[in-house]
Amino acid sequence: MNDLPAQISLDQWAERYRQLCDGGLREPWYGGPLARHLADGDYRLLRLRYDNSAAALRLWNFLLTEESRLFKARQEGKKIIGTMKDLGTVPIMAYSLPNAIAFYPDGAWWVPCIMENTTRDLRIADSLGIDESFCPVRAMLGAFVACEHFPQPDLLICSVGATCDDFSAIAQRLASVGYSPFWWEIPHRRRPDPDEPAVTLPGGFAAPVSQVAFVKGELQRIRRELSTVCSRELTDDMLAAGIRVANRVRGMLRELRQLVFTAPRCPLPALELLIAEMLAIHYCSDRGETLAVYQDLLDEVRRRVADNQGLFPADPARIFWVNPVADLRAMNLLEECGGRLCGTEFLFCHALDEIPEDVSPMDALAQMALADPMVGSAGDRAMRICNDARRLNAEAVLISRIPGASHCALEGRVIREMIESELRLPVLELEVPPLSDAVGPAIQTRMQALVEAVRQRRAR
Ligand code: SF4
Image (cartoon, rainbow, N blue to C red; front, side):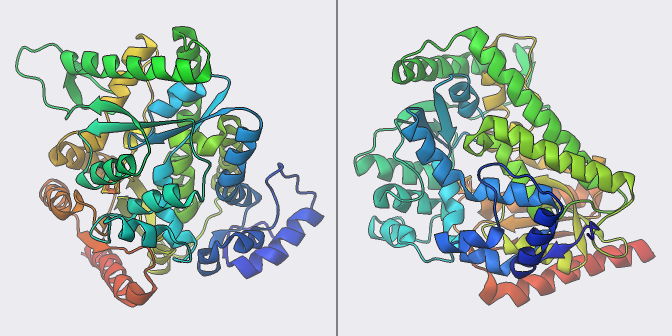
């Protein structure tokens, strides 16, 4: 059996799957051939290219079975906690309870892409006045109203305050059609005044101690609500144990990213890395299985790096990618144009940082929530991106704008100007719609131009 790394199509996965099974592949309950997900309407799979490893197969199968996992948890009597917007903090609290699982309804923003606009979600959002002037997270509103893609949560928890206009408007519209989110406030993170007591947050931003105390109070309210809904007191010991598991998850992901970004030959494609990063936010509704999926990916990537195996020919351009893409196909496109990922900032870098274990669990979670790059200034976010791009030897930065996203209009410029002035690297800003086929050639041309710019700089 040929185990050399390669990218293959969905059709080629049929033969590859047979080979893996003949070779003794052992799969978890959600395993199976990738093409079976077409029957669920996941038509975009036909247009993607995949890593050919058993570890990648497990990753994809895990991602694409989240819906059935959530319904199974409901049947087993677990409480389903819908967490909205904070990306990474509240799920740690929910998973600290033995009878709760958490998921992000926000994740429905990829449904129009994965199902190639064959669902009613966007039409429903349109009919409720949330049209395409909003970002693709508006699909979440349609998904709630259509009762599709996830079970109705026992508790819905949503952050307000320092959130984008899109999410704020969509969440308010959700409340107006009968849902009752438990609102909690995350303040805009500000720089501490001179002589004001301050804390250095995970990831390096600073915040006033008073803001950490305020967020801690808000998280205490969530803690009480979770305890009530789950009929179980959420103690400090349970939270501390939940933080330890979160740090295990994050530690594995950190090693994976470091290997993928820095190995001489790229050991894992951009698309699989993006999916792997997303698991860290809410464990794709199964915390234990996330650890197992990461372990397989790490084993595969370590083996490839040790054997000097990798994908893509001849020294691809090292690209730092900013923002998640609405169309997953764009990640393939980067590599087809001669690039590889050397760093990422997909809006949730705070969910990858190690959580402090030397302070009380509630203080640690409050610090983490305030470390969210989206609750501070665009300048702060740009600075972190700049530092990471420098550390990872990026040769160019690609900022993928999210259609309709309120923060993308000006933030891209702030990031671009800082990268250009501090690092003097080429920067490409481009908008990627949920289905990018119509503009694919234009996106491809612009990515090729970025890669060409990198090659010219190397030749100087
Ligand atoms: S505008 Fe950006 S931050 Fe806000 S919901 Fe959309 S993608 Fe998320």
